[in-house]
Length: 459
Image (cartoon, rainbow, N blue to C red; front, side, top):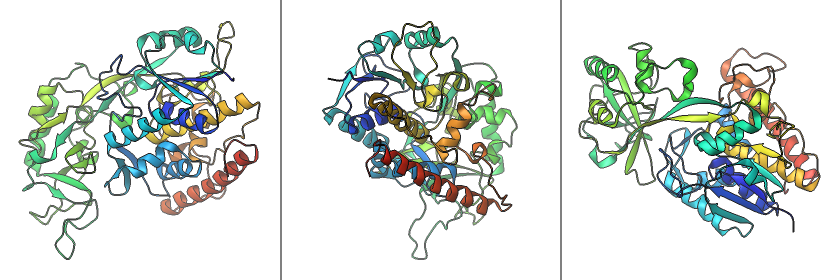
């Protein structure tokens, strides 16, 4: 019997990789340290638990995030299908009931006869590689110290940045006399007077905003130092760090009031915090864009100054934590295979998927697990996997992340900035994005057919 593929980490990337490999008839040992060893941010023992936002970003097909979702759908992503099944209202974004989503993924893994889920800490790559056909490292940004040290011995260097998660508040503790339901640029009420929109909005007037910023800047932080921009992944900047860059910066960022109308005044608020449902029942809400490094007591004190949150009960306070990732341009090839030190005694291929590989984002992690699985399956069957076109969303991201010319690499979301320019420049932004999406869809269709032709994907 063929040796199993060993995957370390049952997050988004590892779970997707395991299910994809099993679907191709390959045995998998999936090693997950929780709940034997907990982390500072996980709350359950579920596979694929989301620990930051519950949003998988835009579903607009003419956006980079929408292109990524089209790839996941076309290539048969197991986790993307579960996300769609467990979606909660979020305007033009795909957001999920995080517990229902993670439980559904865990059930799939536990029910698959080709996947063995091992609840233990992986302490070295050598142990993982023993009696394995290949190894996929998908331990994510919270890779344990022991495994990170083993990885450092294998490749020389690894890098770190800081990441932050937003608080969650209970719905029944919110003041609905102040909060209003509305998505940007949509009416707060339909002609029939029914509430519309997928977000709750907390409106600030100018005086309320100024008092809030004063207290936010003065509040005590867990890590009591000013961060340089290189220390923080830009998409997860703590709200207090945004305010530190300028008092009005939050008002043009996560607190922007554009497209909103306060029904109490009939005008746009000075600033507004949006709250997004955490579950299908709407029993709790995420404070959108309020990633934070404040101490828990300070979060309660300062965030209760947000209009409508005076008596908010916090289901989870925001946290900030250290993330580990490798220098992908130096250490990975386009298949996500690790360039191992030739003096190493590791004699099986090692692949890296998810945030440990230096990409950032939920859908990106799922897609990287799928990509790693395709390339591992090709290796195990002695096949040559088709090259992923750079015109696709993930192809562009991987081309950037594995380009040896990329210096001072920082984790990257999929975005149009890393895609090759259009053959004919398009000045209008909307038309340009649509052209990117059209070109990407054509490249994706050709890539999918190539996978089918070599037997790496079912028709």
